Length: 436
Ligand code: MN
Image 1: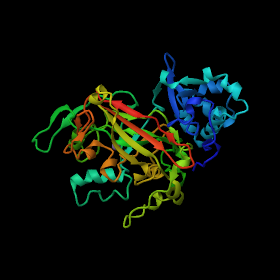
Image 2: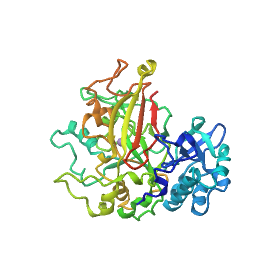
Image 3: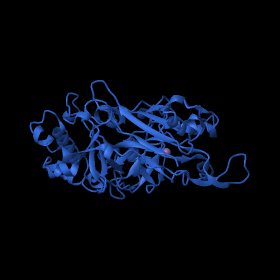
C-alpha cells in the first residue's frame, strides 16, 4: 500500500505558478491523463495547476531515468493502458522524478524551466480524452445507502437483498459508450411501462437520472483462472476518478425482470479525464468503517486486516446541476448532494478480489464503477431517483425551475476533493456532461 513520501510534503512548491494553492492539481497530486492540442495526436500528460505536463516532451528532454523513463515511454501513446500495465514501481518512479523536476528547489530548475514552452501546455487549449482504451466496464453496487433507498420502494421492511452484506453485487456494463467529461449525452429512447399502464410503449425516457460514483482504473491484470488475493489487490489498482453512470429509470425498471441493467444503462457513461493515482491518495487513506453490530463478517477471501485498516479513502463528493434557466440568469450550478467515499460498504480491494475470485481476468485499462455513493440522509443522496423519491418530490432551483429527473439541456457536474490537516488538498477535476 502506498506510503506518504517527499512527493506529498506540504512544503514542496512548484515553479509552475498556477499549481500553488491550486484546489485540484497542486504538485502533490500529479494525476495522469490523455490530452491533445489542435491537430496533434493524443498522448499522455499530467495535470499541474492550470497546465498539462507533456510526458513525451519530458522524456525527450532527458528528465527521466530507469523505471521512470520506462513509465514515461509507456505514456506517449493515445491511451495509458501500457503505463497502467507496468504497475506501481515504474509509475511511482515517474511520479517522484516528475515531482522533483517541477519543484522550486530543484538544482536544475532554471534549465528545466527554460524548456517550459515545450514541457507545459495551457490546459484550456487542450482537449482531454479517455485515459485508457477501456476493455471492460463493471459497475458495482457498494453504496449501501443507495442500495437501501432503492430497496425501500420494493420492500420497506427488508430494503436490502439477503445477499447484500455478503456479496459485492455488480453487473457487467458497457465499455463502448464511456465518454470523457464534456461530451454531451443523448437522451435515449427505449421500452418502458409505468405501473398504471397495461402495456409498454417505446419513446424517450421520462426518468433520466445520474449516478454519482467513484471510478477505479485497473492496472496490471491477472491470467484467466488465477484469482487476485485480496492482500494483493492494491497492486492491480492504478488510481481513481469519477464516473456518472447515467440511468434511464423507466427503461431499467421494465427491462430488469429478472436480469440486471441493460439498455437503461448502456447508452452512455461519463468519466473524469484524470486518473488520481493511489500514490497521490496515500495521505487520504482511512480505515474501512466498522460494520454495524449484527452485520456478518465478510467471508475470508474478502477479508484482509491491512485492507480494513487502510483500504478506504476519505474523498468528499458533490453533485451539481446546471440548467438552461440557471445559465440564462447567470446563476451558479445548484448543489444537489454531498457525500463521501467512506459511505461505501466494501473497499476497492474487496471489489477486485470478488471480481476475480472465480478466475475472471482483469486487463489493464478496465474500469470499475463503485456504485452510487449516497450519504445516510437526503442531502447526501447520489441520484435523482433518491432525491426526488422517484419523481414525487420536486427539487426547487434558484432560477424558479423545478426538477424531479434530468431535463434536456441540463448539465450534471461531479466534483471530488481530499482534505486533511497536515496534507495539501487535492481534487479530481470535473466529471460533467450535458443532456441533448
Ligand atoms: Mn451505477
